[in-house]
Image (cartoon, rainbow, N blue to C red):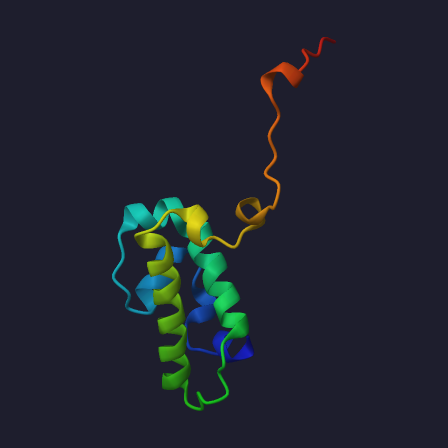
Length: 108
């Protein structure tokens, strides 16, 4: 991901909103506020797997990063989180569930 971190100004970005603004992507602040973790996780995975060898100039790398971030934002903007998230909590084969009857009161 050196190709991404070498982009001008990227090392100063701290929030999902800052990333979206830096790359000139219009966004719904309410959507980003509630889904920022998922958007940024998706973006990080996309950066790691991106084919960046053809992006020789900084402008090409900037456009690639912008496209990947925009795709990540759109994946969660209009869809349910659990449909697109790659976080472990949504990809478990056997979701965890404890029935109320199995809970016991703990007394000290």
